[in-house]
Length: 475
Ligand SMILES: [Zn+2]
Image (cartoon, rainbow, N blue to C red; front, side, top):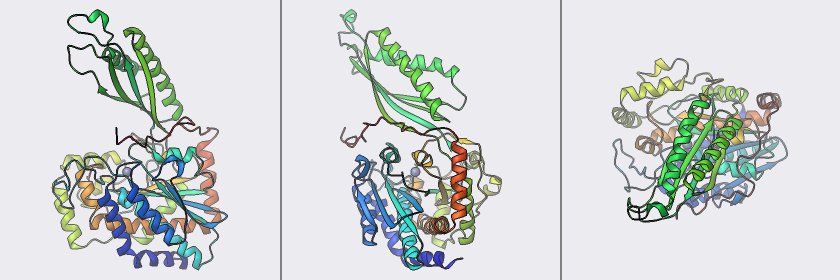
């Protein structure tokens, strides 16, 4: 292990207590996307204290920020998220019991996500200072990953313009890096406006907005035969009228359109817009399209993934205390074996069968999943078009824990999550130092990035004047 890495690890070890405290505070704040005021301030203030230049409230989001230390090239970016999920409030116990019923909870471990990234940035800065390493380290405080894709606004507004590589960590049930891509997506609402009338007495005067919603859905369901296999189209009806004896004057649906490539999403999306217009014509109603967000597909990077795996193996997965293991065993009892099996199988990780009888992942496999596409979407993808980007996982809970669950919330706030945080911070610090000091590796990552993108161009998937929906939680 090089001296500069040792120095960074040393800072992380010495500040373990503080880092865990910060992660636990963010866990307790459990703030929803775009209103993570206390969480983002806590992280930004800590970076400020350590001499970072902090620019707050960027890209039209009060809770987005970028913290920079150093000058010149290369510039290594670290990302951190801190938004919670609605309705997932949960105590730090291995059974389902909300802390405050109905309130948000950290069911995706973003309390760890933000803190591990912040810890990395500070630890790397310490090593850079001590060992005179050239370049800059940037921490991106990224709001609203769960719902409004904060990073897409930050990318569109140029905040990732000067980074040479970006590293991000996400709590997971597994250690390692997948090279899978993920689906590009558009999220959009369709508002239909008709005319109210007495549905019994004078239906001939009414124009039903609900009919339009239903006909549009029917049209889209016929479209399904003519889209590529990996496409996903899902919708909900948010508003369908008030009561049966009033012809509904207003109705609303919300759609996600997903596909492996951005242009495939756009092709399907344009067709759906035609179907919406068709439904409006058929019902003599008006349609208004409210575009909410768009996200790209993810560009993996094997060079950085292999570097991360090498560092994970050198550092070694965490050792758990008896208390951690006891908690893990209790949580494991609440997860059906078939759920665990399904999750392991779906991961497509080679040797996943070895994990069936394990409580917690204690291996670090080679990067896997090249050429595969996972069926979720993330705004990390848009960053991955700007520079070589890798998001990796460290085990933060028992195998089989599903994301966005009460188990995930509980695990993110106890020893299991804390150990994942410290492990991840060290892995990211080591990887950032490698990228800052080994020009050949960074060049190789850049070359791979260029090759994967080829002649495709990134065009922001959101319009230039689109603003983040800051008032969404008031609605
Ligand atoms: Zn997440």
